[in-house]
Amino acid sequence: MAYREYHDRIGGMNHWLFAQEDFKHIISRPFRGEEYTSVINGSGVVKGEQKYPKGYQEIIIPELKRRADFFKEVPALKNINAADAKVLTVLVGDKDDPAVAASRSYVGMKSNTTKQSGLSSMMEEFPSTVTTSEMYEKLEQWNNDSTISILMFQLPFGGKAGKEINTTSLCNRIALEKDGDGLNQMTLGLMSLGAERYYDCCTPSGMVDLASVYLVREKGVKLRPDGIASFAGFEVLVAGRSNIVGEPLFNLLKRFDATTLGPLHTKTGSGGSFDKETQLKVYVELSKRADIVFGCMGFHPYKVHADTEYFFSSDMLKDGCLIIDASTSFRKDGRKPYGDVDPSARSKAAAYTLETGGVGPATVTKLVHQGWIGMLYQNIDKVRQALEDNKGIVVSTFTRLLASYAGASESEAAGNAETLYNRAINPESHAMHAVDALEAIFPALMS
Image 1 (cartoon, rainbow, N blue to C red):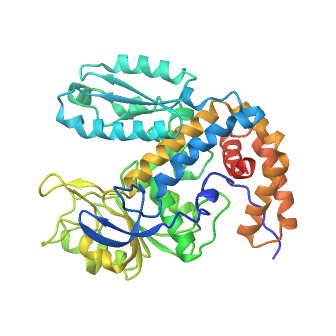
Image 2 (cartoon, rainbow, N blue to C red):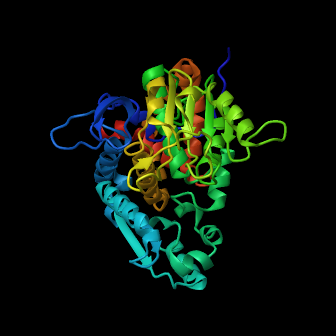
Image 3 (spheres, rainbow, N blue to C red):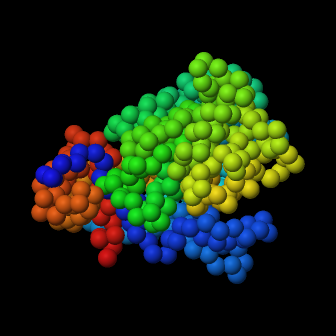
């Protein structure tokens, strides 16, 4: 078969990430006093003397810091100081408002992780009396501030502001090159279409990464030139259709050649009927087929079982499936988080994420990583110059990635690699191509 040219994204960090020998993604570790096996570790948190293989966050965040420190060794990048690049989070709500208490905790976690990557964390806090016009005025200032790499609004807003400010309209005014949390609907649309874009929505992107690592490391699946596993041949179920998780995740998976089932939702049914009995029948039929289950429903609209609040029970899952569960709901005693999948069902899975330490840390890591590449977008001329200065490394890296994916010889892929190199350095092309290329060649530069 003749070599078929590739024209989509190429590069990024995942080629380096998935090759790390100490990243044993499927691990055994105690959690809440219980021993688990086949856990997909998003955080890599190590407590006390316990030693476990590193997780997604514990691999990527220090690597970002290491790469930022290396800028001074690359002539074109030596004047970029990561500590000058700010990841801005905007929190709206009074200090005594319980509705934003969880947001404060989450902002703290994002702030700590941001600093560990070498970037600066910045928070702007406003009382619940802030008006729409005041927020628009501040947003314009942030969009024009070159020291801010990405900015995000911590939603929902508390108090009066939460009722009166149209946050969708507000988020749609975030400059696309700073929309690191994927809150602007334009970002969501571009991601769903697979079009050129600055960022992906963090949670679905992190979920795909976690699944990709499992497929590459445990199933021997081929890695695409864009650093994502090919989902070809796998039936994949998306449970949930929210605008920032389920819907974009469903569209992403189609782009990566998955056979997509769902998304399941409150109006799922058959023949125009969506009563509880019909819904449960359809839920079970589809979930039993799924090789990979992405749970992002949350418990509140779905009381489908008489004996459990979880959405997925053991009899709904296929033996040996992969579970990536993004739902974290607080119910029962109001303290412990719960996902979509009943813990008793995990024994049927080949691997799974826990409610804590799985998708959440992956989301935060993805956000911080996008803050890091936002810094590169702010210095895109320097990035393109670094690529030109290291053309041989870029072309050889691209050639290797393309040949591996196509099952072809490097001589067959060399011309394609040259074309993609020229796209990356072209000022008229989207900046993402240059940033992806720089991330791909960092290991070679640093060695």
